[in-house]
Length: 198
Picture 1 (cartoon, rainbow, N blue to C red):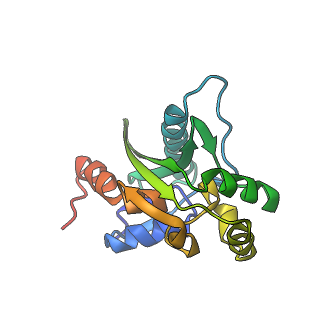
Picture 2 (cartoon, rainbow, N blue to C red; picture 1 turned 30 degrees about the vertical axis):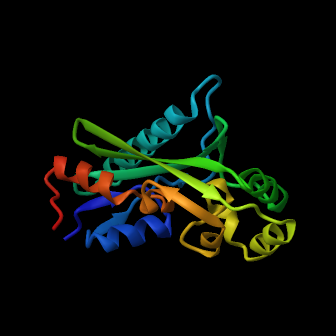
């Protein structure tokens, strides 16, 4: 039985829910969950990621109502890479991906993944914060990684579960949070609406 709706087309989030053995249905509004929502003027990066996760959950819940679907919890998440207070979103193109990766080279950055769960009149949220340190990247490393096509749909222009795993010297926090859905925080939210995992 479907336990919840996932307000995201991210294959990584689907994969992680399957890892938890949660039967779910992907549900995104007709506009989709496309490009990153803009950061509001003066909005701190840490609040930006929480707000966008909440808004995705609320849009998913509205789509559920508009489509007349059974009322189930709606799960959404947003992942943001933060370096020196700047949000490094999904790259617009190859040049942008190369610029982002050059900034991450040889430094530590934070990955914030906010999780929001809308159910009835409740909107629950949690956030995972992980510090990731990259080894220094040569221009050739960045070129090869961009050639792979992997950076283009990912916050911070990299996927830790893919080829970019070899760039990571150290991680302090949640590996699944960097992938896009922190399992600890997600399970904690789901328990609050009666979805208890083994």
